[in-house]
Amino acid sequence: MTDKLPSSQSAPDFSTLLSGSRLRLRGKSAFFATLLLHTDVQPSNEVALAATDGDRVYLNPQAAATLTGTELDALLLHEVLHAALSHVQRRGPREKKRWNRAADLIVNGMVEHAGLPLQEGAARDSHLETLSVEEVYAALDGQEEEQDQQGEGEGGDLLDGPPSDAPPGSGPGQKPADLTRRWKGTLEQARAAESMSGKGADPLGLHRELARLAPARLDWKSQLWRFLARTPTDFSGFDRRFIGRGLYLEALDDESLHALIAVDTSGSVDDETVKALVAEVQGILGAYPHVRAELYYADTEAYGPFTLTAGSEIPPPQGGGGTDFRPIFGKVADHEPDLLVYLTDGYGDFPEQPPRVPTLWVVPPGGLEDAGFPFGEVLRLEEG
Image 1 (cartoon, one colour):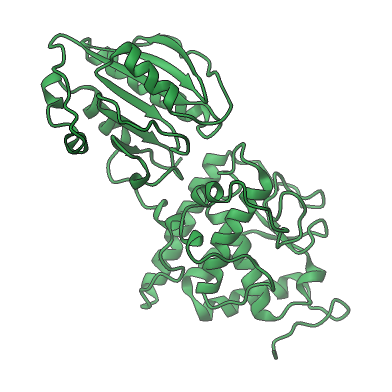
Image 2 (image 1 turned 30 degrees about the horizontal axis):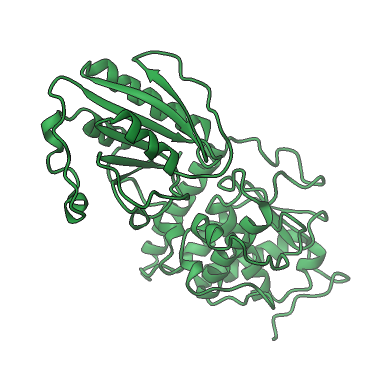
């Protein structure tokens, strides 16, 4: 190739490397150019090649100077997409190496779709790379781990914090939700720039990682209120999928509605999301005295019940292990509630048979796709 950059002995300075990449990407795609323009890229000798902490991208200047121009563009786009898609913030308690591999599969597919060269031996999977990173992570369970493509050790190129030689102001100065919101805005600006360029096509192809960033169709609080504030007779035709299985809802008591609220505490749902959901349920209880609710926390076991009332203290979460939905559905049989609200990302073991009560799955961003839930309705929480 003819665009080989000089060796480190005669390499241009760091700003020249970045400027060249921005110019090349501008000619290729307004989308890519906008993403890179809004990314703070800093030099670091602590990373082998490149990495991101979810806020900034860190590039080893000596290693970068040995790459061709298009190789550098591909490398930067790889890291920028990791940051823009919040792959650092979304990992939570998941195992670092497998999460990094899952995120790399997705980003590698996007980079190749963009017509840029991947590193030799970069992991690819034409099916998995179109899914969300959470789905890919679950699909990789039990598979032999491959060596990290970016050469950054156990955590790969997704860092828990800035490198030690990063400039002041790097790293977790912003809350994860604020970072996610900032990158979502950047992606929207990139889409707008691409649209104004007249090309119109999505430069990254059809990926669930981008679909998950689409604006919420309906406010989740309004949906929750509509679910819990229904009168008993409103549930006669609640879920047509029950009819297909020969299941029919029993008549509900005209005077009260008993709700069971379950919260997945396996580590996939953060405390702020739990508080937001429970507080909203408490607001509904205050407005509709005929609704009563009990709360369970759950991982592979069920913890509770805790009686919920308007304005009461929210019990501290319990659990933290794996995810199994069956213990909660066993409690459904014990308590015989009129409906169940389950806050979870959806990655766990479902019961073989659906319950005889209407079920609302409340799913945070990045959770299981709607089609993965074998029964019930799905409510999507908006980002941030």
